Length: 589
Image (tube, rainbow, N blue to C red):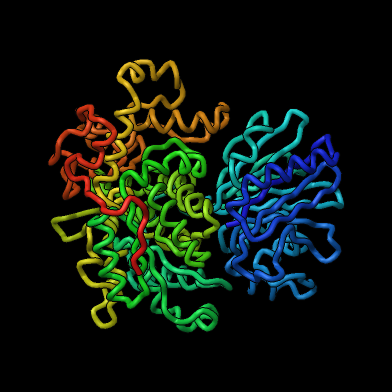
């Protein structure tokens, strides 16, 4: 992932302004440690921090068309760039970068070319011929992007909030699947798939069509000129990604360049569910497996860095981002610059455990639509920023545009969870890859119960966070929470603790408005909480909050809200917290 920053239409074109833009761009250097670039045309500035994945030697940005009249700064990957190049017969390309096609497509097709791009991207394109510009973000919001406004009428665009919050009067998240046009003077949605209307589809389930669509989504993401690997938690989604990658990797350009053995990575507390399952899958697939361990204290010590980089105070996002943040640092230290991950499957197929309570196929489908539309605020935010914090790129094949269209066109009756018929969560996906002749995975992995990432790394991780927050947030602080934080008022000590840290880094009202709120159980939307009256008394984003569904549900354990006050030194002596001999991260390969 790269970092982009653009200041457009500034009344100040001085050297001091250029220096300020460069200074703010450096706040994004973690996203792109390989090279920096800036272009200035009057009061318009386009800056870039590059993570070189495709054409590392000549693909530095900003990028230009032939006569340098059109300038682009891009964060992302365009998987169909070779096909697009073949359509642009009369154009000469300066680099082999996949993003080089954007300026030329604009020359050829104007502002309507964005839907031709197959990939994940955020970009700003500036046309010096009339001082116009466009800003666009990928369909689902895999890449992060923010837009802000200066008092002088300037428009600011950045991959992360931290490059805008000190200089913009107001800023907000740039909506996924949208394009901002200076000529039109506003925003429009360029991504308009059939499922977006939330109409109930009726296409019968065909497991082979679904399988081929996902295999294609994974294969196209094997495009790389640098070493890469797969994130492997041992759950269904990451295991399928790893299995397909291992199956098709040998014939790729990357395999010829870096060798045919696939590397896989997993993180967890010692003895966690994910570590055991991931090791079994890695052995089955024959990957070179790297297992990272962290302690509860390691994670707690990283919380402030995590909140600064992820730019949220959402509880479940912080819980899951912390292990991923720690793992990403270790992965990058091994010389790996890109990983393929399994985000998005639970939203598309109703994989979260609360979907067991969906009352009918209509509610089930509407909830999946709501979840996909909100991904940019949760799992995409986590996957993008937790990895980018260390100059690592994450690719997510489940969020492939074509695959989403296939998966969301299936009659949701087939996705419904029906235990009496042997259909657990994500049954249609499991069934599609249940092949006895050429098995993708062992059966018990293929049909393993859903574990949310923050649970799977070790149940004691969340319990430890709650205990830590309880020692730093007093009861009287919670009594005044609605006065201190009137917007998205924290309702637990853990949420209050994260909010205090967030507000220290990002005190602006615009910043707090970028974070979603509302009731949730096991990662549901507020609407789905209505499916079960018992959930309103057990609002927690952990999968274990799905009472009566998760095998280790909270109802089987001590009530976490009545946690006794203990000295901070005792945090690793709580029930079910695993003692770790090493105080730091360790790597086992």
